[in-house]
Length: 322
Image 1 (cartoon, rainbow, N blue to C red):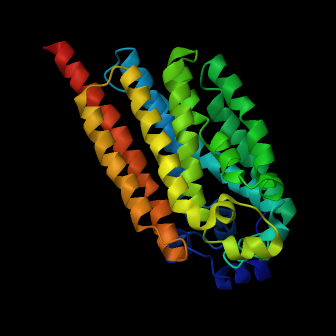
Image 2: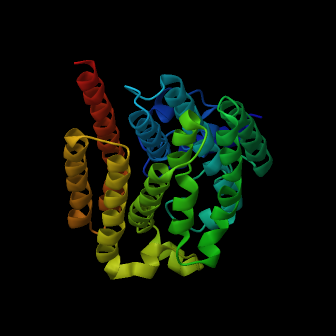
């Protein structure tokens, strides 16, 4: 259901934090803009962060079982799934957090608290997204379908964790990186140690980058009683980020080694390590813009790892053909 004329007008006037001058504001039809904002299509970084573990896992499976590259059909399905399910997750999160978002400067302009979309409209939109996600999921084998369904539980409880634990970012990591398992099972129909270790590394990656992200809201969160690793770690954030990102790097590298990668992947991982080091050493937790830039830069980290895996597979295929 489209928003009313008053809601459409509100959508034009309410500022959306960290989403200015994007294509949604410039070219999307006015009736669609509130829903695209609700799905965070105007801020696609979350899609990339959800997608990279899926593609890493697909590439690891291809390397392990001698394929020259990941299955393009699987990569496409994971891309569609990442767009749809990240949109569904954001919509669900905004329904649950609508009263909290109204009290936070960065989020009070979101479609539900600002009145651009009603809870009923958002719920219908959420159901439609989940149905599309289900259509994508059933294209995979039975093991992957079951694994995907199991992801519903952590997804459902995550929005409530900031009320219950000082470590909601850990729950987000468990939820957000299910694809690190599914990329492997989509090809093999079973699990093994490389995707499990990859998943562990991806979980700590999420804890790290979402801690950086959470520093944008720490003052408001403290006032309204919400919890986060940003508040918990405080001035010790950089020290803990070193630990989180070290575990991330070691786990991803180990998963690659167990999958039979060559020197080219090690080179890519050296570049990836430099990217993580840059994040930590240049982070200013008191500057929201600084935090946002470093959070978004994790898209580059994911790309470096994926290109390293693809290049390693190409090299293996070349050696096998000579």
